[in-house]
Image (tube, rainbow, N blue to C red; front, side):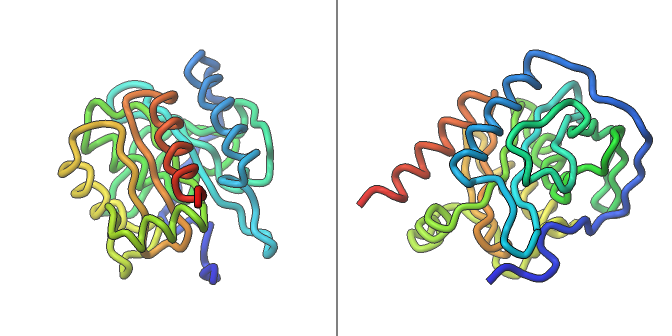
Length: 204
């Protein structure tokens, strides 16, 4: 069952208005996002709560991530993305630039980029078949007692990433029902890993 607080921002958001600059990698990310939307890995639950968020690193620890409450849109424009300039798991704070608040999972994305310099893309999706398959086979996951969008999740993910240096990587968020995260050195390899694992989980 979907938690009642799923999809909501739990960190302190410090946002200033602005538009994310266009780029080839953002176009590539947007195309990948549409393909994930078409496979119901990004979307909106019947209760109106959206799910799924993607990001790409720009430079250093800065990254562009889909904005909050965009899960129901098949295609996005630059206004539906935010540039995360800074985040703090200690202060539970995310500072961003954009027309909308950054995704509720922005701190988790940031933790992945901070933990592995070679990571250039992070994809967080929801999939019942893949999640159940992943958990039932005891594959890589965060602990079930760690909720999404919290400093505890960001810290747990950071430790997980440090222990998995070979890219790309996929893991389940055991405390975030249906939550799956993939990250890699570029958009294409991250997307391919995610879709290949999804196909394996749904093949009899």
